[in-house]
Amino acid sequence: MMDLPGGIGMQVELPGAHVGIIGGGQLGRMATVAAHRLGVQVTVLDPTPGCPAAVVGAGQITAAFDDPDAVAQLAEVADVITYEIELADPALLDEDVVGATPVHPAPETLRIIQDKHVQNAHLQAAGIETPRWVAVETPEELATARARFDGCVLKAREGGYDGRGVVLLDDTWDSAEAMEAIGGPAIAEEQVPFVRELSVMCVRGADGVRTYHPSENIHRDGVLHQVAVPPRTEIAVTEAATATARAVTESLGGWGVFGVELFETAEGEIIVNEVAPRPHNSGHWTIEAATVSQFANLIRAVLGWPTGATTLKHPVVMANILADVEAPVAAAIRGGELILETPGAHLHWYGKRQARPGRKMGHITLVEPANDPDDGVDTLLLDRVGEIAAGVTFNAAGDP
Ligand code: AIR
Image (cartoon, rainbow, N blue to C red; front, side, top):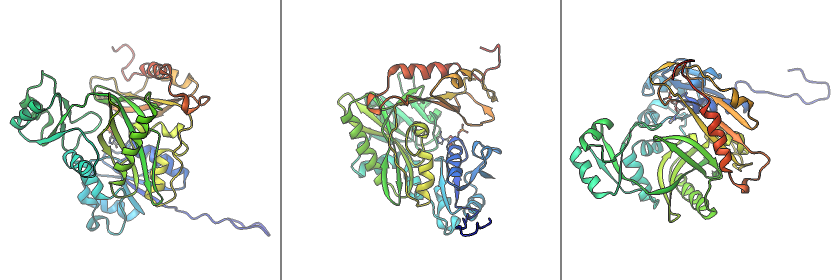
């Protein structure tokens, strides 16, 4: 650029820093948008051509998550590699594939979190309470576990997400059928009689750990349905949840964003349900209602840049938009007008080309900027976001 006489020449270095992400779904997409605002380039590795992150301008290497050549190619172009899905293969994040390109969070963290049995054992060794559990491989082992626990959940050890790979074992389930439905090694976990599900997003960078405000998570059919921040619970509970999530994050290696899902029991006790070493659906509210979002902080953290304030600005609720179809169809959203007409409502569309039953297609954030975070979330706000989300459908006009 031209220097002004007597002025100071501005130097813009292009290209800037470059983050490689394994996975280019909605989490990679929202991270890409945040990265671009910071002048950071993104390339994602994802098997779906035109994946959600690529549509908003990330470069894409189109390959399977476990393709070593593709991971090596990603390491060539990127200054640092991170991942937004646990299906990434930790063995491919070792030095012999990625060379000198750093990986954050550490591949060892992915190894721990990817296997639910190893994850629980790690947390227990770190002095963090989880539900009681046993690893099971046969229907007989599962039957023994069911006799031991008062209520039992069967979870695939690896590969489950968005409600897949989990069976709530009520009396209608036969142990052999349940093992077959999971289709591989599993854990049988005691069903915790919780009063509320909470989660805490954490970010860990070179400058330490920051925690976001805990959220209250409302699930439907095993999938996240709505989120409210602050949660409708006691301050002592949110403080205990924050302390537990911080301890979980400190027990795991590497920089990045960590989502810690927790149960609150009737006694106000906090038990860790699951940990994700990546941005999390229950943290999408941070885009509109935190000083710096989970996605901007992911980019800053993995690059070793200063992380940003995580302060809650005002009460907020979120509702997922799930595909209400019975079979896969080309994605066409109808009924979104009400979202756009509602003051304080923000529509996030993930750009997935196909709607599949129950698939996460987008979300709505509804904020109350005039209110103070200490006012809490009015249940009416949750009702309102539920109403505007219910107006959305992926079925063609005339279909049920
Ligand atoms: N994701 C990763 N773990 C859990 C979830 N929800 C996000 C990631 C991933 C996307 O879901 O962004 O890329 C995959 O979604 P789908 O609908 O293609 O299976």
